[in-house]
Image (cartoon, rainbow, N blue to C red):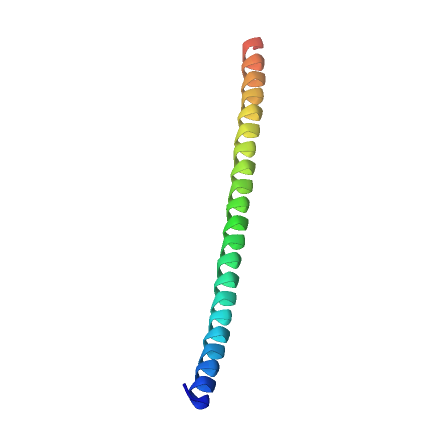
Length: 77
């Protein structure tokens, strides 16, 4: 192997190395960014679901109390 071919091979290896490094960085950024965004969305949906369930439960209790008061008042008349 002559010196020119060896130098060309070293250059090709360096180019492949830099391209692979850029590819890996892009994949890491995309993968971790997507996962973090996905986790954030799941947490916000679960938080909203918990708030809705709490509001429905509170509305049920308040409705029950109002219904009991109305029944009590109607029974006294």
